[in-house]
Image (cartoon, rainbow, N blue to C red; front, side, top):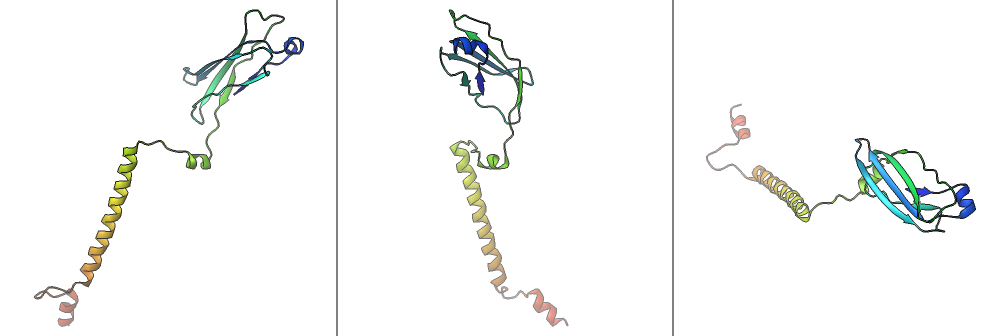
Length: 151
């Protein structure tokens, strides 16, 4: 998020030293982000503040406040009103490319399950093919032989 100072104060005296306070409140009323960032005199009039990890699609109310450092004077700094912000939702490409953190044991377990399923499928296929190729044991008749004799 970018916060900035603008107006006659800056035109006359330049950027004052002070501290930015940023508070983001979720729709449930709980504070989700709270940052305090110092700004030195003469610095850029805008400042980027990282919001950190926020859930895509979540809504929040953001309040910023600039407090000039002790000894800074020369005018009044008006504070901005509350900003209501919705974090953009992820696109399909972002969802697919987002890494999913998983512990190593879970990855090994998943690989073992997939490998076990593949081995079981191969073994079942081999059993099925062998059962079709194996001639009937002596003394037993196949269904097709018994059917042809009764006709």
